[in-house]
Length: 217
Image (tube, rainbow, N blue to C red; front, side):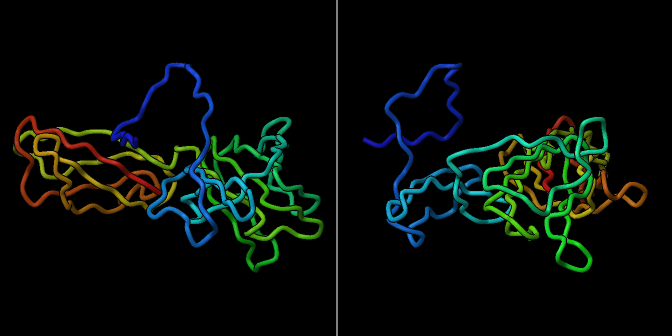
């Protein structure tokens, strides 16, 4: 019997025993509309695969992950990702927000903008020079900002500080009273476009009506 859960299940530290992941025949049978982190087993290769939404791709989960260090400019940290001598499963953690080189063979070099807590995982062995497909970029969740604001019947403009370090963000707004997602105009703030958006309603939200928002980079 199949049971469908519509919400998260909190096991409060308890174990799942005798479990397995969903099996698919091959790459043509991947699940439709996967979510970030979803895992399956391919029967044709007997490989464990994980979906990475940042790349819109299923990637192989290596049988071994090797912690390599932290990326940043602080003591004991490494300033950028290595380009040679990489082993599949090598894992780097971002300790300082900024741009890190994922492909040094392009001009200019291809970089990935990161937030603290993001990770890079090597997808394959690299002896010469790493290219963009050498790394799987794993956002930490810091690339999403959620929150709420409340209408007062008069205010039509609201500022949302997201601190995602980019003007290229998308946002959704939900009226908590009706449960509906509403189309609302928003734009990067003129003073701090990388970290704030201005939300503008045609008609002021009613007094005490709460809107929840999700801003994604």
